[in-house]
Length: 476
Image (cartoon, rainbow, N blue to C red; front, side, top):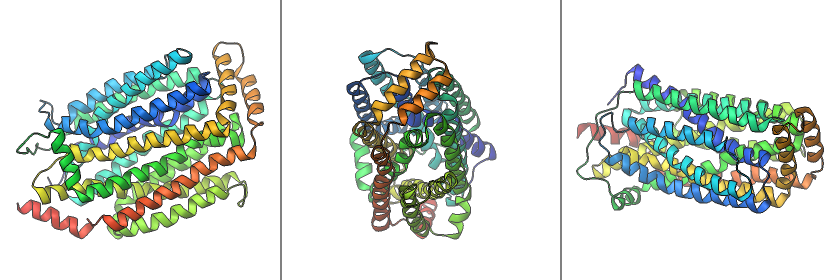
C-alpha cells in the first residue's frame, strides 16, 4: 500500500498520546510513588526492585510471544485493532489499582509483584498490536517517515503531559495526587486508543503459507541478521536514554530540595518535551537531506558532548539552572533523532525479511522494539535500585515518605512536611549525589556508543538498498 487516508494517518498517530502518557506514568513515576509514599524496609524495597526486574524480563520475552499470537489471530475487526483496544482497557484498570491500593509491608510486596506483572502483560497486548500496525500501513519510505514523525510528536505530547505535571502536584500531598493522576491518565489511555480503533482502516491482511509457531518465530529472528543488529542497538539505546529520566527525580530533589526540586523537574521536563518534540517534528525534513548514517554520526558526537557537560555541571561548569536546562534540551534533541533512526531501521527489516525469505511478519518483527524497551527497563531498574540503596539515598527518602503518610492521615500539614523534608535532604553528602550523577552519565555514554558501533559495523540497509528491496517486492 503506497499511501494512506488522512483519517487513518491522524487516528493512528493521535492515539499515541494516551498510551504513552500511561506508559510514562508507570515507567517514570511508579517507583518514585513507592519510594516517597510507602514506608518499606530496605529488604522490602529491594524485593520490589527484584520483582520489577523479573517481571520486565518476562514481559520482554512475552513481547515476541504476543506478536506470534497477533500474527495467528483472525478477528472480525482486524489483525491489530481488537488487541489495541482490549489492551488499553485492561491496562488502564491495572494502573488505577497500582496507584490506589495500599497494603503495608510484605503484603504490599506481594500485591505489587502480582499487579506489576499484570500491568506488563496487558500493556504488551496494546503495545505490540499498536506498533505492529505501523509498518503494515505503508511500505513507502516517505509515508513511513511521515507516520513515524507525526506519531512521535503525539508520543512526546503524552509523555510530556505526565512528566511535566506530576512533579509539580505531588510534593506535600503525594498519596492523593498520584491516585487522581492515575485515574485521569487511565481514562485518557482508553479515549485516545478508541480514536485509533474507530478511525484506522487496516491494510488487507497478507497471509503466509503457515501459522507462526514458537519454533518459527525464533527462526524468523535468527535468520534476519539486520534485525539482530538493529534489535541489539535498540536495547542499548533504551538502556542509555532511560537512565537519565529514572535518576532525574532523585537528582533534582537531592541537589535542590524537595519543594524546589519539583518545580525544577517541571522546567527540565519542558526541555525534555521541547527537545524531543523539535527533533521528532524535524526528523522527516532532516531525513530527506541527510542519510541515516550521517544523522547517527552527528547524534553520537552531540550526545557525548552533552552528557559530559551534565557530569561537569556544578563542578567544572557553573551551577546555573539556565545552563542545566540548555544541556537537557541539547541531550533530548539528539536522543530524539537517534531514537527515530533506530525505529526506522528496525521497521525496514520487515521488508528485508520479506525480500529474502518471501514472508511478511509485521507483528513478530515489530515486537523486537518493545522487547528491547522492556529488557532495557529491567536492567535499568536494577542499576537504579542498587545505586539508591548503596548511596544511602533510599534511607533518606524513606524519612520523606513518612512525612507524606502523615500528611495523608491529616497529622501533618503539607507546608510543615515540605520544611521537614528539606531538612532531611540537607543531611545528604556530596559523594552521595555524585553517585546519582555517575549513574545518569557514565552508563548512558557507554551503551549509546556501543549501539552506534553495532549499527555502523553490522547494519547495511541504507536508503538505496531499502529502495531496491521495496521495488523488487512491488514487481513480485
